[in-house]
Length: 402
Ligand code: ADP
Image (tube, rainbow, N blue to C red; front, side, top):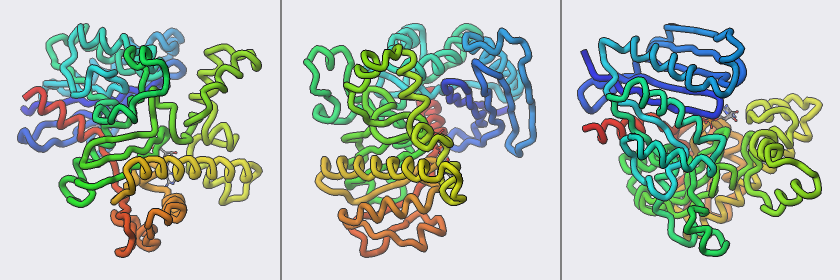
């Protein structure tokens, strides 16, 4: 019999989770993982063991369960299945990835009713994200009240940003109400910083920019392991061009959409979060692989895809330039997440566009998926490092319950 820890990563329409067995209080083995997807449309659950053997696959046919408000029921059934599966190696704690911890939560925290209420109160800040994290918490507080639940925050890493990076130039009262830059993807940044501390003393103690480029994308400026600025701000919409999000746009555009285009707030929300970015410009896909494939195959939308890709790169180079200027130059640049880890051609082009910073890319190392992808005479060390948010959460949960 061993202790197990369940790690949950809830998205707006999905619930990803991994079950880990505690080997010796220091190392963990992933014994099962699963995905509940299609919440609000066509719910589907699949759980596999560590050998990828399917443990359960399930569709819910009841149309009532295809509604978004059935999220708690679906989460409840899924969690019940996992708790039963792990009866022999009981689940002693559950870690939740929480997008927003506000100004108050800058460390992982044990969830109780008070914390839950605090996190619920942040929903207006991130209405598409926070309800997803709250659902499995709420279900567990009700069904398994004796099991410690720990919230791990994507905002926490950025708490060290100085006032000049956090504050918008709005009247002071808004800052006091929590209207400020928070930054997101913190668990990924924490992993990279932890990895650098173990493997690269120069970058761990120097000025490093980390580019987390996934469906959501952001860049952060890190000095001596602490965040000093980041591209996402009040919400995860700001900064870079993303799969379906606009990234940085003129705030007054929203007024134009309201007043001149006569769009409702809901329509604008859908437009800027779900229909823009790579998808909106390419008219092909939010997925970088599809955009690149359309260009490579010279498909009917190749020109749009090329424009989308140019926008993505231009925003990224610009934001890296802004962060580098803010730090007075950089020692390192790290690429991570789906696009950062895999899109070699894009990495190469970004590095070439940043040659004015002294970056010299080693094309061969970049092509052959090496960690170090800059030349020995590059003034900036460039690396590709796969991220691992779950390992950060696992460590945080384990440390907190012990
Ligand atoms: P999420 O933000 O959902 O966690 P990921 O970190 O998994 O996203 O990144 C997803 C993105 O990574 C998608 O745009 C996908 O196209 C891109 N990606 C994955 N593999 C490649 C590849 N080989 N080349 C280019 N892009 C890739």
